[in-house]
Image 1 (cartoon, rainbow, N blue to C red):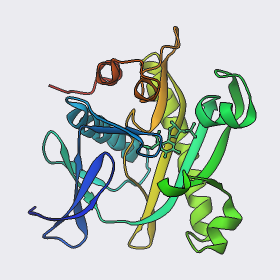
Image 2 (image 1 turned 135 degrees about the horizontal axis):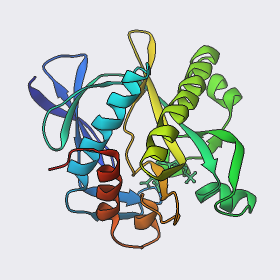
Image 3 (image 1 turned 30 degrees about the horizontal axis):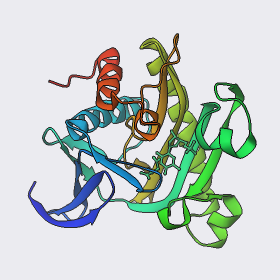
Image 4 (image 1 turned 90 degrees about the horizontal axis):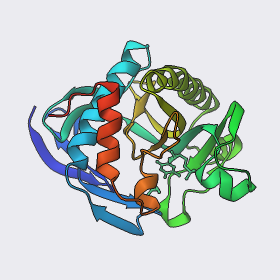
Length: 237
Ligand code: TMP
Ligand code: ASP
C-alpha cells in the first residue's frame, strides 16, 4: 500500500490517502491533547504505544464479532484502515462515575453505575463537544434511527468484551468513547481505542492509568499506558 497525501490532521493522529480510494493510513503521533486542544504536549513513544495498543484491542473486538475499520498494522506508528464516512458523534459508556459526569451531576467519583450509562456527544471542539440526544442526531441528519440503534448496540457489546478483558488484567474500565462510520452501507467502529479515549484504573488501588494523568498533571502518562499494555500482553518492543 502506497502512502499518498495528507487527508486530515487531527489532534493526535494524521490521516493519509493511499493508492486505494477505499483505504487510509492512520499515523499515531506523540501529540497529547486535552480540554479540546487547549493543552497539548509531545510525549515520547506515545504514538507507537497507542498504535500497537489500538491494533491489539481492535483485533479482540473483531474476534468478538464487532466490525472495525482496522485492516493491519503497517509500522510502529501507522495502521491501514478502511475509509469510513464518519458519523460526527461520540458514543460514551460509563461503568463508574468520573470526569464530566461528576462535574455535571455533582455525583461522587468512583460510584459504580448500575446500569452502565450511555451518552452521545457532538464531535465539535469549538462547541466543547456538547451532549446531544437521538432526536438531535436525526433532526440534523448526522445518523438515521437505525444507525443510532446499531451504534448503541455495538458500544454496549464492546463494554461486555472489554470489561472482561481489562478485569483479567486487574484493570477497571471506568468509561470510554467510541466513534463509528459507514463502509459499504455497514456501521463499523472507527477511530481508536487507546488510553487516550477511555479511563482505566488499577482494580485494587484505583490508580489512574489513562489520559487523566495528563489532564490532571499527574505525570507518568506513557509509563501508565505501558503498564496497561504489559498487563494485557500487548507486545510493544
Ligand atoms: P468525559 O468524562 O470527559 O465526558 O469523557 C468520557 C470518556 O470519553 C473518557 O474516557 C474520555 C472520553 N472522551 C474522549 O476521548 N474524547 C472526547 O472528546 C470526550 C468528550 C470524551
Ligand atoms: N480529546 C479531547 C481533547 O484532546 C478531550 C479530552 O480528551 O480531554 O481536547
